[in-house]
Amino acid sequence: MHLAPGRYPGPFVLPASVELVGAGESSVLAGEGAGPVVRAPEGVTVRSLGVQGGAWGLEAAGPVRLEAVRFGGQEEGAVRMEAGQLAAAGCAFEAGGERAVGVLLSGGARGEVRESSFTGAFRRGVEAREVELELESVRFRGAVTALYQVAGRVRLRHVTVGEGREAGLFAQRGSLRLEDVTVTGHEYGLQTVETTLEARGFTSVRAVRAGVVLIGSRGELEETVVLGSGNYGAMLLVGSDLVLRGVRVDGADEYGISVTRGRLRLQHAVMTRLTSRGGDSGDGLHLRDAEVEVEGLLVRNVAGVGVLGAQGSRVLLRDVSLESCQEAGVLAETLGRVTAEGLVVRGSGGPALSAMENGVLRVDALTARENAAGLVWADCQGGTEVMLGRVTGQDTPGAEVDCVARPSP
Image 1 (cartoon, rainbow, N blue to C red):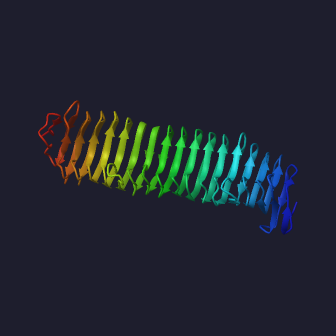
Image 2 (image 1 turned 60 degrees about the vertical axis):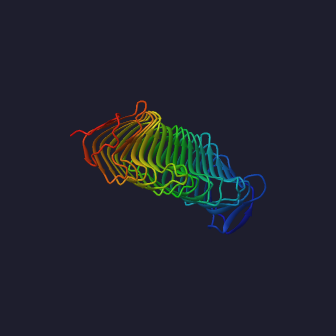
């Protein structure tokens, strides 16, 4: 079925498996009121036309294929499917109101959206509830939240998100996979709750609070970049079990990576220029009640501590370099236990190592140079303990206190 150029007032109910082809944006299906502009209860193919107005642009089930279709002006949303399979390519979705959703898939629906754009203040660009969905080469600009996922399986490839207010990407339960995804602005770049996460090449730029917030989640992230973030730090991990490889953080506020409870394995990370608006943080790694293993970390020019282990944390550091950390290189406190091998601490505004409040530090193969307060500062009350192995550079352990074992000859 072909449509000549013109504006066609709806609503419309399309028969099963019909193929509707317009003459580009000059062919427009228009609707008003509380109903959808187009209903396709048994599937449809729509190409090269516009859908304007109505509560929903398209409500459908069955197999639905959309090619070069432009949606705009809908009060509730552009596309809603509670069953069937959606395949959309080369489409444009323009928000019609603050309540609007670009694409809503729920129930037994499945979908893929490729080479498409979502523009305007959608409440949710794509909402996926207990579905399988893939987004590839998709751009979001202005959506409050670009992806809102509840359960199900969602994959994003080559996706950009910007100019929104809340979480750029949000997932609760289910499985989320990210490949080459960038979120600019937003309160959080990526936020997950009880989600299995696999990510390669995720970037957050200028998040208002934090670039990445993972709560009760598990998975692996490779090549994660956070450039600028607000008062929750670059990456905030709570009660999660994660492997992070190739992290780069620059210009974050408060923390590079903050971990509370859970487990973290961190490999090959670089954190630079961390600030502290409140004046009491700015740490590279801020670890509380966590099991953490780190290999290959550089922390440079931070307002606080390079690595802090506290509240019963167990931290293992290998091949770690901490440069120009204003308070200390490594701090262990409140039953935190930090073990390090192959540690370099240079240019600290305080000591290279600090231990207090029952903290335990065990360091071997330490290189310490140009640290303003010397090698070690320790509050030796309770179970505080510092044990040093091979030390190069500053070889004076600090104050003559019982809880600091002198370096080996």
